[in-house]
Length: 103
Image (cartoon, rainbow, N blue to C red; front, side):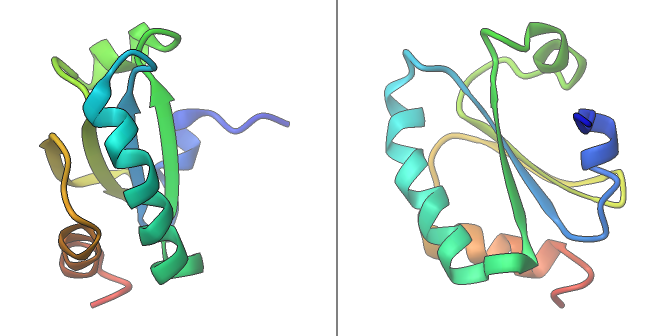
């Protein structure tokens, strides 16, 4: 059974959503950084990549104007949002600060 996006962001575990596009240079720079974040935080966070070209309705729903745009959700609530590339350390710090279960 496929999980819907709305079901996914209801998770108790923080969900970092990366809105990206295949043609986006900064998105390609962000991909290995997200992998490092996942390696460091493991099961403490879910990382989901959403291709804006294939999911235009979802990108529109969340008013994504540029890529990459990252959003952090927990229990359906948007805790944080930012466009652009961040370092692994900055992302880990933001997730730890914004997510209630990690604090």
